[in-house]
Length: 180
Image (tube, rainbow, N blue to C red; front, side, top):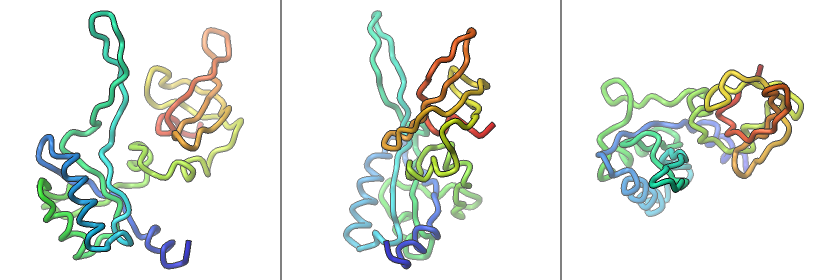
């Protein structure tokens, strides 16, 4: 990675884009095509629709499914300038940026971590195996455990939690833990 690319990535921020209901995938596809056609890959790096897994039980049969975390919203990692603002605002299905008077406001680092949209390897840089962490959401909320292992590809961490007098290894999303 050259110095210019590194500087661009450091200057980029995540922005929230509001879309028409049900247009999230279409907006993502249209925006990716426009970025490619205009050669703007060096200023618009990533476009995502935050998804979450859930289990649906119907007639006694459980199925793992996926749904949008924030319907009508798309996340964009980009360097904000007049050209990128214009591209996003003029994408079919986009109603505007989230922020006061449609003035784009980037997500904070904490918000990005909670949404789980950063490069997974970077997430674990501040954590070590054996370190104490607290679970902040999900069925193990407020329990404390030690980091046992990392799964960089999936953005998961294995934590050893003591429950009912026994140590249990649970696999959690990275955005479910904080340092104790």
